[in-house]
Length: 295
Image (cartoon, rainbow, N blue to C red; front, side):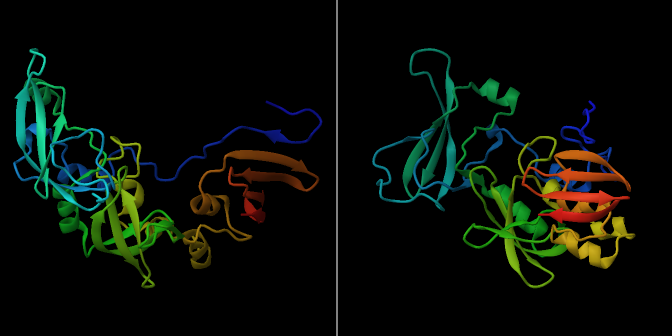
């Protein structure tokens, strides 16, 4: 599409080519796939434990009386799987009910599925407040003490509040902790300056989840080695998600990501290119180098 008389050519969102686009599964995804294999609830052992993330009992459970008073927070309590029964309350096909216990109180979860259906589907119930402690302990044994390279500057403090971090830097994993309903795992780490923070993730591969995954947050390899041509001063800006005049388009993209809109503006001295981000930031390039910007 060409604009008339404005001297500006505008496009919608442009996705620039990504360097080093991997055709095969990443080592990080392969790691998750090797150690965290989805299993149906028919393979659960009696005694399997789950960390509970909500304050109140989820509507998906039926509580046997007596149960916890409404004034008691359930967050942080451990629910234990005690087995299953088959019931047909209306005389129909028998359906499986999963049984749990917490501090002596008993709870039921109706699967509305037969044992054959559960086995065929490798069915695992969706219970948002539950975090599988087997998975959490496995992640802790594999990652605690390990040095990884973090890909995101979106970090969280001990209170769960978002803070500005750095990306593409080494961090040492200090612990693996329970997360929240959506992202069940918190990776708590220390950066190369001694700052401690956390990020939240799932334990699914990126191919199986739209949420934040290990592959999207961390790299086993030092990303700096892929960009040896970038000067240290520019690299420091990239780790802080910042830019400075003189940086190349590739360096700016590595720092801020792909722009949401690109405009090419003819001028008397040549072609000027503007990158626009939905955040309100914009960059101007001349001859491929950053000349002006607002973040």
